[in-house]
Length: 148
Image 1 (cartoon, rainbow, N blue to C red):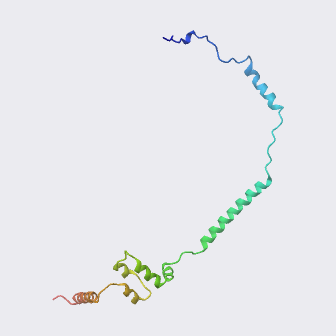
Image 2 (image 1 turned 30 degrees about the horizontal axis):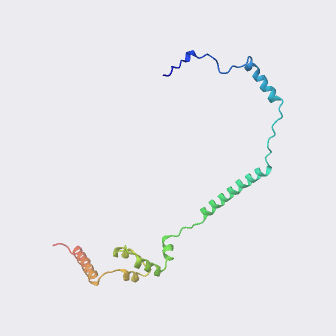
Image 3 (image 1 turned 90 degrees about the horizontal axis):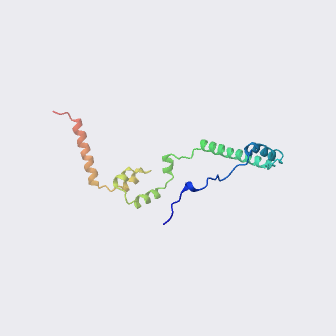
């Protein structure tokens, strides 16, 4: 079996001892080393680096100001009517023909330059139109005739 280790049996020895008057003489030693040392030369910055930085900042400010003024005074948005006027009738027709999710109600809302052209896109029977017109006429007649 191992013997138990007893810390009290070890000799009491400090690991490091400071020489006498060490902390009293320390400031004097430091002053002697630094007071007579040659000054460290500062690296000289080239004057053109400062000039480059100034020109870069001024150029950036000019670009920002010019872009701000240009965007403020130019109107780049087209009105809806101008944008639709630029689309040709052939393109509109091709879009409507190729559109899969298009319904008759969508086609009824399309405003064409010529209203008779928009009727070509509607899938309406003549009988339906005459029936709706007849109903409207009857409703108008009933509103205008007094009840007896």
